[in-house]
Length: 180
Ligand SMILES: [Zn+2]
Image 1 (tube, helix red, strand yellow):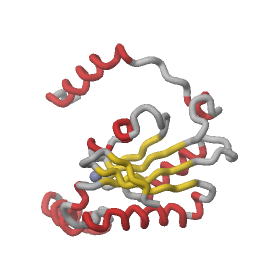
Image 2 (cartoon, helix red, strand yellow):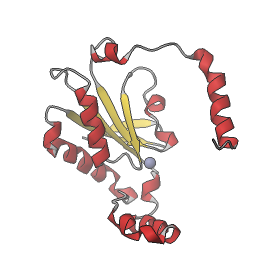
Image 3 (spheres, protein in one colour):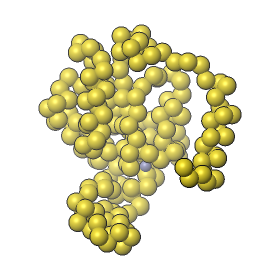
């Protein structure tokens, strides 16, 4: 196993933090609704400034989180929602909150830029890079992108019965703004 400074950082951080950990409820208890009476999943950006535990504090939890570049409603986000949905009894209404944010990294370049970089580093994988939708968008289109992603989840027939909300997290002020 390769050890480097990141390995040390992760293990020593965990060792310092671990005494504060208390054993949580089990998945079985969560599925029975012992800990979660309103199942909530948050789809948000992988940006460390956009962490739900930070912008929601401890009031809204527990909730499940999907983090990806831009907080986009990707096929893999749908996969996670479906798994999350299956963990609860059918009568339980699941809410999904799409949270994207200002000053997001994906607004700093376009899809072609990412494709070109991948192809430059790994030319043999050019066709695969071209096939990936990286989900970048312009900063001024942020709220339109939130609306579009919310609508795409609402339009997904497999997600029938799932409530979907869209929020803009204002990175500069910490405000969570309801968009749709
Ligand atoms: Zn972001």
